[in-house]
Image (cartoon, rainbow, N blue to C red):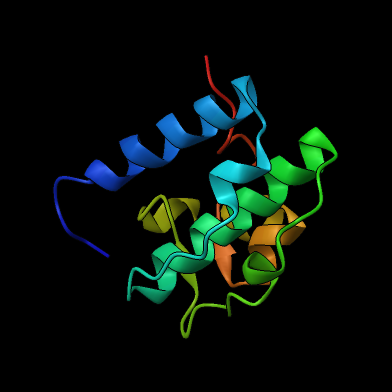
Length: 107
């Protein structure tokens, strides 16, 4: 996951913004397959979190997305790993995705 640039982060946060503006289950009705277990687990965790925020049912396919094979620290910074371990919300944690508490906060 050390590719550069990290264009997918921009696309992910655009999705977060769009879903928060218009929480529509149709936007997440169809399963996705990226072939990257880390990105799949990250997106599933984000979708679950957004559904909880909007009080929407989590699509069954999202619940079937497995955890990463190895822990995934989204920041990629070694000195933030301990903080991410402590702060990751439950939907991320169960898929071995570790983010900082403010990962989904936007300015």
